[in-house]
Image (cartoon, rainbow, N blue to C red; front, top):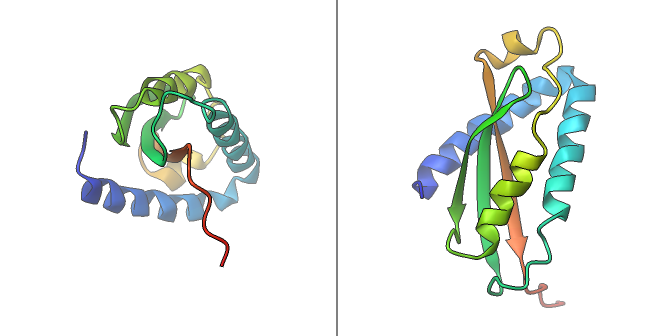
Length: 125
């Protein structure tokens, strides 16, 4: 498990990169659809405690492969392994469109996904 502060700083850089990638709307739309699919698959995990939170990040390479999947948060929850398996099942992604490498500036993009399981609904107020 990695330090949450290191994740927060790295995630902020990822958000900044996402804003730059708006020049590639079709690819961003595809990533959002994949993220929605990833989030939809393991949500109903009955073995995890209430308010289980898992943060996942991975490197999405220009050829569409996913590597270096890491998780943080409630990593001992039974659902943590399913999160990793579900991310792997979405790979490979499409190859990056022309010009995306020059915007990203390196051969991979760090992708973050936050998972909440068995979350208690907020109090109406």
